[in-house]
Length: 66
Ligand SMILES: [Zn+2]
Image (cartoon, rainbow, N blue to C red; front, top):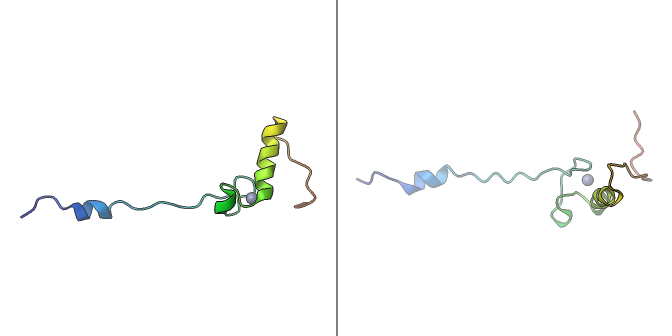
């Protein structure tokens, strides 16, 4: 009678590969633009680094007002 069963141990391992949302717009990220959802969001993040400040770039898109 085996005291240890490796199969039960394996079953405890679950793959938690939840895709993280885009850090810019919180949309679901895409593999080709990881970790962003699009090239645009990747550029937004890049511009933040280049400008050295957390500046919101003037975009001709997403002019959402409440
Ligand atoms: Zn995005």
